[in-house]
Length: 603
Image (cartoon, rainbow, N blue to C red; front, side):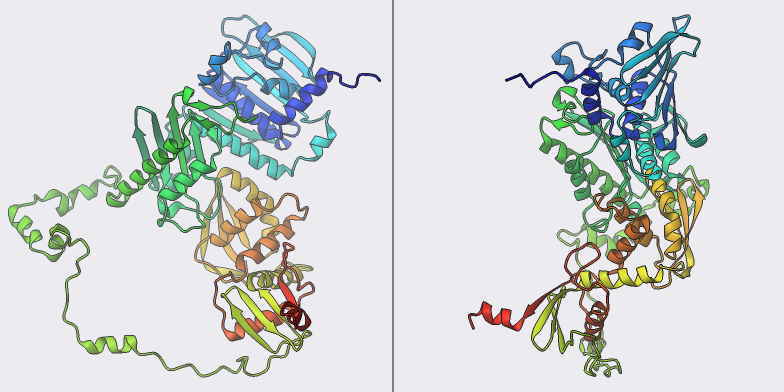
């Protein structure tokens, strides 16, 4: 019998390895930007066409490469960062394994131009499918320009798995944002389809954050800075009022490397406990500095996860640092006197605090309350007429029964419902002649709203109602890319949304059957649900938005319904085309027949 194990051809092995590192255009953006940072660049340009599918190019003014290094950099595991195994645990650069350029060259057509300052001429290399097609001297500026063209041209199946341009562009902007935040002293620019999108000038971390998210955050950021012998943490977190329903403005860096860590994210959320709603997400950009020997950055192909030697210490430290900063904010509101010199002329600041004024203050009830031992929660008793409390305790007379009360028989389609009872304020029990339905009130309401909106939007756009006061919605760069994708469908569904520049949108109106909110929470929640819609379900943008809207506006579990509301919900459910299931396919009700019940009890 012949041997069956053979070595893979090198180009196939490279393509398989590339699949771990280069999953989409944004993966290449990350690797190329980090290489430019490692090269000591002070200015980095990112150019993309067709959301990176036809071109991703990074141009930097870094150290450049020699002719030999330019050729070697495309070999797998060719690196200038690692000489011994010990070096792996002292990594302070972004790239180190020598896989990025080899992976990019395996799945695209690559053009490299590079020159060192001391060389008279640079080097031009053209590679396709890991094969060098051309190499020659070229006149170029100092630094490196590398262009990745036609990603996955040699793997059509992989190319077919790429998402829409808007989705891929959102991922590119997210990677650009992460590197831009990590290195605020570097000048970054992003051009897409020949249109400039971002120009980030060098500056402080706070200035970089304001460049990305707008000057409205100028006075809404809390400084975080804690130092110990083991580790340091610094950065900014948003004041509680900046928390949003959408995720995406959370950035955690370890030794300037962006990482994803649900564990440390939980530490930050716990620091905000009771300060923001449970379904909100605080903004933060936090940097952790720690001895590289205490972490392992080589545990993830894209290097977005790291392993700490002692996670619990890191968790406690992050939680304490954020809590400390929030506590300082709470007791010392931030006033910048440089912004308004008139504040310094106020009598409270200009006039001295004399002995007379001190005695007058100490005589007051407020001073005594907070200085007497164990009296921090003492409330001074006041004389009050007992009759004042009478109305408080007396129950109001019951309201007269409305004409639409369920005591008058509501007409139900088949099945005929005789009575409806609540269960745990989450389920409804609807009784028929020979059975009963156990109905999940939220799932049922989702089905009702879904079919109503789907029917309303079949032929013509859903009518809008203008809000009295338009709301302003400020998004992260990545979320703004998603918004651009879904705006046409949102307008069809009745939302009046207009771009206002710098990732900001004005909400002028909402669908006619939605209660207008004074803020932008409807769109924020809709955007969040849309981003995290199950990718395995292949449906249109409009379908995703309708399902998300139905989920958002359905009555939630734990909500107590009136008798009339219960009857109306059951009535509307059984008028639906598909009453048995919520839009996500989960059951809206379960039917129990009388025969089933008798069998359960052995009757």
